[in-house]
Each structure stands twice: as structure tokens, then as C-alpha cells.
Length: 112
Image (cartoon, one colour):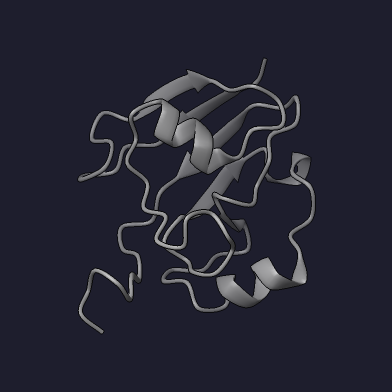
């Protein structure tokens, strides 16, 4: 079973967290089941960027992103080459190190 190490995030996960993660689960589902309140305004439908994460280790083990995911990621705050939407990135058998960006763009909760 792979392990995801979530790096510390001042608001969401101040201490960081390391969790066992079943193969095939999304990064977002693992985070939520582990008590990490990663935003997901579109209810995991690849229609926003609130679950944007940066995969610092193990990025190449993930399936390639779809065109829809890439289109959404273009709108994410702090986009990096190893950026993924947590709702779309499914685990394989390799461990990951995941960084949750400091900010997210949430059109619903930010009164846009």
C-alpha cells in the first residue's frame, strides 16, 4: 500500500501528515478520509481548481492528466510542472509527497 506524505500547510494541516493510501484512490479522497480538509468546490467533477496540489515526489507514477484537467489547472493559483487536481490524480503503487498550495481560487466562497 502506498503512502502519501502531506507536507505542512499552515491552515489545513499544520503538522503535515503521513497516511497509508489504497491504490486507485484519488489524492483528494485520501486527504479527506485522513482529516485533511482539502477544498473541493465542484464535488470532484474536474470543474474547478480548489483541490489543486503539487506532487513533489512520485509525480511520474500518476497517470497523465486529461485535457480537461490541464484546462482547469491553467487557472490554478501557483501552478507548477508537478501540479495536479487532487480529485483526478489516482494513486498507483508508488509513495507520494504532496504539497498543498498556500492559496486556492474558490469562486463560490470568495464572493466573486
